Image (cartoon, rainbow, N blue to C red; front, side):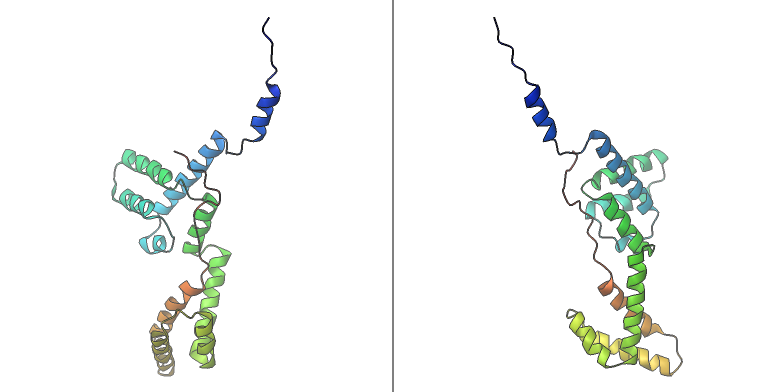
Length: 188
């Protein structure tokens, strides 16, 4: 007579150790990435440049813009979603919001850059503090922009140099964004 062995205890132990996402969760994440990819295809080149996308994703988005056929665009969106596979949808959403200026962090960075620019134009001591905070800045071009901005303000000219100064400061005060998932469970 064959001896019957109850394997239910072994099976339950294996279920408890299952730590990967379900197929439904994977599909939801892929669809979310594809939707974000579609949203990014509508953004301009300058805005896209502010999002730290992997090169292959950026190339796929650029290719989408060249396509006229609906079917080709649909397939390209699927490719964009597939190439974005290793990215976290929430982080991509945050990066899009930062690039378009729709997030609180983007607004805060904008205001901080404006305040720093105004301080630098108004006070020489602010330059020393700025260099301490951002040691990688090109000090010579920074000083030149400050001098030009002060001169333009005195002569009631348009604030061209002040805008350039802002463009120099803004990327330094903007929070750095990474798009990769924390625990990378890639889907093949």
